[in-house]
Image 1 (cartoon, rainbow over the protein chains, first blue to last red):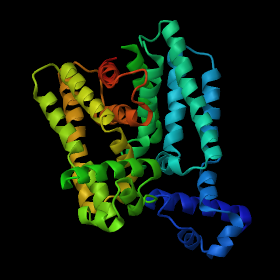
Image 2: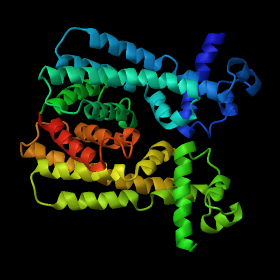
Image 3: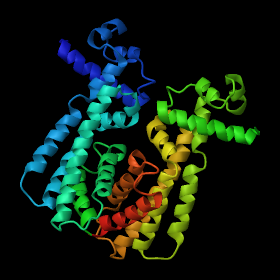
Image 4: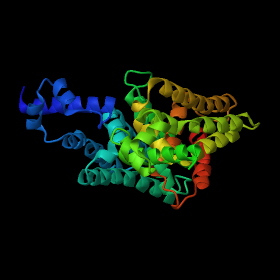
Length: 190
Length: 190
């Protein structure tokens, strides 16, 4: 196995094990066993369990944020832009189910610098929601009165998806994302 | 200190410590220190860390469910009953912020029987939401088409409150509960 493939395999195994047992209960030995390495060799790829935790999230939120940037910059009414942003965000959660689960649970285990970085990205996502809500309030598209509370309510609905969505169940990822986009508009319009 | 007071103090300390560090990282020694007992004496009150985890939640969800039962059984239109249920549920989350936080994070650490019990209670809460949504769809109060998805969307909004609400901030518990009750109705009405 090439080093890059090995690293991918290590991250996938760690994510699976953190998801199942929690970060504190998971051991480097288990992760090594899962990828067929001995513990010493595992440390060739990764310096600590905490570094592994941080690495699991690298690029994920940034990618979703990039897609939100694109969606938000397209021309359209606030309703259309809100739909587009919600859709991208919900799909982002659905395509990273295990990672979102582990992040929500293990936020307190992150080292300070990594946590600040992730929180900046999350803040930028929240800003996208809030900006389009404020635009819609100004232009009279939304009857909403509290843009901050509306943002938190929407983010709650959209993020909580990671707790109940089961891949291969009744609804496809796209069906959930489309439904939640309409639902978001309704919540702000009355 | 009387035994009952001591037990209350132990639970409060455990909740605080589990909230801050996570269940796996918390030690019985720390909990003993926090209430001024030695570790041996702590085991007079509680047989294990896992028992302590389970005890932290005893009665909490059941009380909120009881209030939801009452709210749901009052006469009123589906809109009125939905408002009442959402209000009770959100206040339940807000009055148990640390416990909800620890539950969401540590669900996987619960012993099987305790988990089944908690999940039954949560299912009964979900049933309240779904029943009133179905009633409102039948009576034409709600334009909603998917009562299951609507229930999950609402529960997400209402449960996520535990991640962002800061006691003593801009909004009182009652203000958030009232706002979310209106917001729920809007989401289903269009």
